[in-house]
Amino acid sequence: QVQLVESGGGLVQAGGSLRLSCAASGSIRSINVMGWYRQAPGKQQELVASITTSRITNYADSVKGRFTISRDNAKNTVYLQMNNLNPEDTAVYSCYAVDTTYSPTRNYWGQGTQVTVSS
Image 1: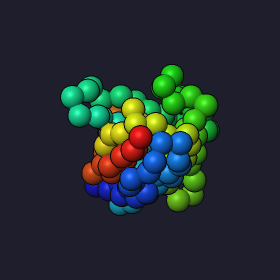
Image 2: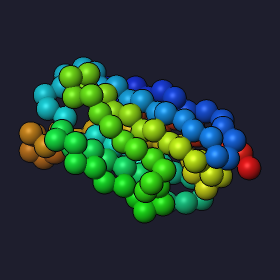
Image 3: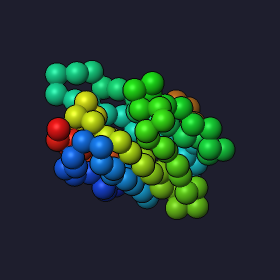
């Protein structure tokens, strides 16, 4: 089994920054993709950003230019640097990891961390 442990959420004023971290541990075989989803109250879950082992990144349009995803492959850790935050970024942010070496692919999820941006 693989566990994902997130840290770094909290309360910040609009225009501020936060950095989320997510470390994977356990029976890791090969985590190919890591990333972050978020879900705000009353809204659908949204893919925020993802990054592959070769560091190919993908971002939601709403965060491009403000958020940066990165990873440390040796530590199986992914980071999300969030700058110029606004109240619309308030949500529970959940880390995920994908191991495509299994069939079917295995997806792992963190417990979620709250990010609250005050105006």
